[in-house]
Image 1: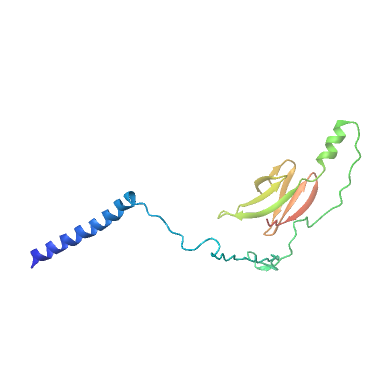
Image 2: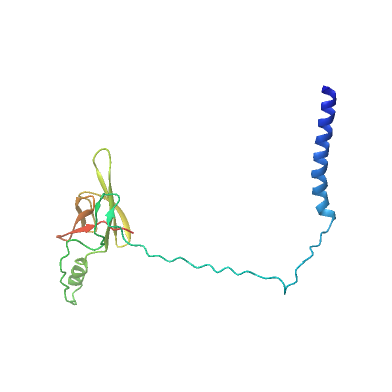
Length: 166
């Protein structure tokens, strides 16, 4: 009985491998021509018109991270009117006038570590900085750090910048 079963299984394996080999070799020697049953005139082409769905994103009324209502603005909270100085031929006065203008500052948030040190992520004139409280870069000093804003001092003038969302 066992011998008959082994012989039957050997013939089944040979048949399967023979079929697979025949299909593999057959595609190299036989050229199959496809016959187009439909003429070009009788072939009806269905054109599918896809209508695009348009929508508009609206700002969220609630900040999901701070879990409170938020007003979205990237502008300065405490904005002071800046007085533009007249250009004088003396280069010293021109450089002082240029240094008094506030750089473009955007606040992106902070990280508080286990040792309670806070690191702020600020973009100043398209350059990203990681700064601690009290750090100074280019006459820009970090005074206080809050969850949604940062207090900054630049050339003896203080401003508070809100969280920028981009």
